[in-house]
Length: 361
Image 1 (cartoon, helix red, strand yellow):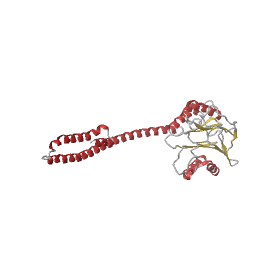
Image 2 (cartoon, rainbow, N blue to C red; image 1 turned 135 degrees about the vertical axis):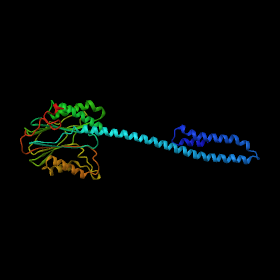
Image 3 (cartoon, helix red, strand yellow; image 1 turned 180 degrees about the vertical axis):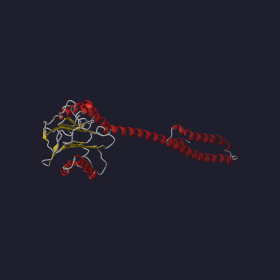
C-alpha cells in the first residue's frame, strides 16, 4: 500500500489527486486484514481463501481504477493545454498585428526616391524582420545644398526601431539650424550618450553635404562602413572611411581633420548599411567590400534605380540564407546635364527631400 502510495506521487498530478486511488486501496486492505483473522481456523480456512482471492481481485481492480484515473487526468490535462494553446495563439496574433502596424509606422520614415533635372536619388530598404534599426534621410537645405544621413543602430527589433524614431526626431530638429555634417553628428552623439549609454545602444552614422554649386562634398563618419564616391570622369572609386568611433560610446570622440571632396557631374554617391556587406554566401563567405567595389565599377553607367535593382538581384543570387540584417541603400547620382535648380520640388511632402521638410514635420 505504501509502495502504491509513493508510486502515485510519481504521476504528474496534484497531490490531492492521489487520494482517490490510495484511499481505495487502504479501505480494501484494512477491511481484508480486520475481518480475515476471524476465519483463519482450520475449519474456516477455505472461507479465508475466498477473502484471500478477494484481496487479489481487489488489487487487480484497483489497477484498472488507477488506469481510468490516469486516463481521466490525461484528458483533463489535454483539455487544459488546448485552452492554453488557444489563448497563446490569440496573444501571438495580437502581438503580430501590433508588430505589423509598428512596421508600417517604421516604414513611413523611409524617404522616397526622386529624380530631378540635376540629381537622381533612388532608395532601397529591406528590413530583416518587422522592425528595422536602419535610418536614412536626405534633405535639400538650400537649392544647391543636399544634406543626407544614413545610420545603423546596433541590434535588431523593437528596441532598435524605437531608437531610430528618436534619431529621426532629433535629426529633423537639428537640420532646422545646422547644415554642417560634423556638427549634426556631434549633436546626435551627445543625445545618444545622454539618453542611451546606460542601455548599451550605439549607432554608426554617415552624414554628408553635397554642395552642387561649389561642386564639393563634406562629410562626417562615426563608425559607419566606408561609403563610396564614384568619379564619373576618372572612372574611379573613392572610399569615404570612418573618422571616429560609434556614436554613443564617448561624448567627445577624437575626429580627423574635416575634408572636402571634389564632386562633379556624372559622379555617384552610394550610401548603405553593413547588412549589404554581411550577406552570407557559400561557406559563410560574406559579400564584402571587394565584390561591392567591383559591382560599382562594372555598373557605373546604370541609373540609380537600375543599379540598385541589379545589385539586389546580385546579392540575392549570392546569398545562401535569408538576410540576417537590415539593408538600406541610397544611390545619389549627379546628372551630367541639366540645370542645378530645375525640377526640384520644394513643396514636396516630408521625406521626398523637400527644402522645408523640417518645418513641415
